[in-house]
Length: 96
Length: 475
Image (cartoon, rainbow over all chains, first blue to last red):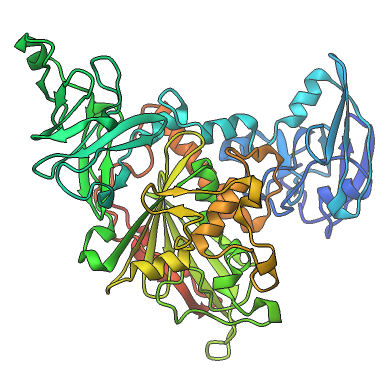
């Protein structure tokens, strides 16, 4: 599945702890949508540099676009920088 | 309360976490109930953790950064502080340990443990005479290499022949006295800096002892976006009229910017000695009708040095930790022609005796007079202070001795600060793995250059302007 899904299109984010779901459009970011929904997450630079908005990924494959994570952390695929990264699967489940 | 925006209530097994976003027009206050485990997992992020802040800032002999820093040569004082043979000895701290530095009758420099090996009296109040330093207490006398020359209250020659006072290698170069206090079997090559060359009149060497952890001062030195703001008085003296006056004609003004762009975009590139970074600002002119940028490149040489460009000179700045809370900043202005010490003191704001005492090198600022700030002058002066080092030192002191980096909010303009922390932590991990830390095997650093504001085609690669910074040098 991860081979065919274009990460530039919209995708769904499910929040495991709060049992909520939201859609990230092609123009938006996960962080934008979370803040619009009033969901509390840490953030600062909004450019994929500072690492403030790191959260755990429970299901799905992140499309990493940050400059924070190491090569190993990227390949493990169990965390994501919310402000810039997207999804290689139609649904991404986050530990939020 | 965790910070101004975060509040935590709760008991042993659960907690309510409230976060307010005052800067984003999002005044949501959210209540969450986390188990203890998940809450503390939430605090784990890639931002600087409390543990990383400790690792980066603590420099004593048993700490990870202390062990890392001990794998490099460091300045321990200026040559000027030991002005002639048999002059007064100097007490100097380095990485949380105390040393006495002295110049013997032949002019050779010695670095010994400050406290006499006999029963611990400070040698900094000793007598320097006849080719050594003598403890006042019982007259024990030591040569620059720690050889015990005399022990008046102990006649057994075997004692002085078999033992030595703890001593450290010393080099005098570039107006500085350098030492190495790490493991003797891991002593690296003594590195050559560009400012070792040329006549003494082409160089000004200053030492400033400041009550702030070294990293606060070092981070200020790799932060291009503060130059046009904090240092407005020198970077743009007409700021109060909403206009911009470039000061690039001032040969040794490191605040001189060619354009009034206070939001530079930064790019960093790792090198074998640390990294270098560019600050790109919008250029006023075009090149052949194409978009142009003004670039300024700052190299960082681990573990404490950066090179700051000025129009005709380069400033080599070392932020050497005396201990966790005090730093000796060694500031060297070096260039192709004679440089006036008085001009450098004026530009740095060190000509004001209220702030800097030439005799002791101490930078003085206390909160009882708001760190010496002149609020009246702020109608004409941006900061109420005067001079680049005065402003930088005051800001570092204002943060408290060791700033809590878990509370900060970094932005892209801080990316060279982030890179500094990353490279320092990498060096720590290399030492922990038994490897040589970044750059400590490089014998010659003379190819590394800072680049003062230079206009290039926006599509050109800034790295091509500083190719020598990227040379791979065999150890």
